[in-house]
Length: 121
Ligand code: HEC
Image (cartoon, rainbow, N blue to C red; front, side):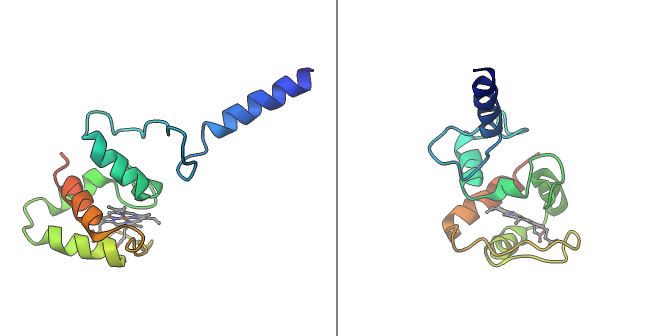
């Protein structure tokens, strides 16, 4: 009896951290995304960007805010970054490369995500 309850509690606890790929369920909020356009956050989430990027701190990849800060005032950055997110990037931030995201992420979505990233403050 006790064991069953414990097992159930454990399963529930583990599932709360299942993360993306656990389709159907509503995912827990991604830290640091409060107050931003929920449609863009959802697009980034379903495009898998948050597996490697966070809004405000470095993870596997640089934080989205660090990317915005680095390219602020760089008029050509948007087109370059769209290309890099689609085809992959290496050597810009460190030794870990970003694999190509397109496919599966459509170019139009990448365009929207790069615009969103570059406008972050
Ligand atoms: C598997 C991990 C991973 C995923 C998934 C990923 N990235 Fe990255 N991203 C990285 C890493 C690592 C870098 C740094 C690459 C480098 O140093 O050139 C990076 C760099 C970037 C850059 C900056 C490139 C530059 O030249 O400065 C942008 C913009 C970016 N990612 C956006 C995205 C977006 C948008 C998505 C979702 C469609 C995404 N990333 C998905 C790991 C990832």
